[in-house]
Image 1 (cartoon, rainbow, N blue to C red):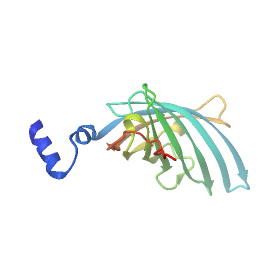
Image 2: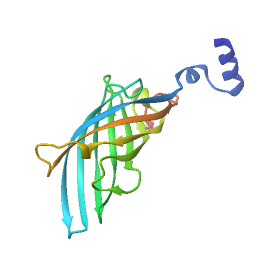
Image 3: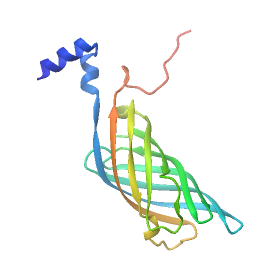
Length: 179
């Protein structure tokens, strides 16, 4: 089997080490976080806020035991909400992955749950060259915090797909130039 892969790689012009390093798959699990927000009501129909949260993911493989720092903007207009932002995940070895995140369109601001998506955009170390993304169903409105005017918690089942095709150097650092 291995010799077949090596022959196929050579036939296609793919270096064997690059073939061995390419990884892809699916994952599912749970994301949980605690966060804060600061908002500005604008009249009776609009509310704008910036949020920041810290969380963790427990999955069946990829993203398992990652900690996350997320931040972004939340917008409510006429009782319909939407949000967008960024999340940086760090695994136990210190390698990181970045996701652009957003609600899946607008949803009722008082809904018990909402759908969201994330797209992997950047990675370091073993995540260099990452692509793919994930979906989740956020359940933050179901939880009550001690300071509901400025904090939130959430729990969300997540599922996704990833593909990692590292560059030849395996580094995300910009190339150096000699003078």
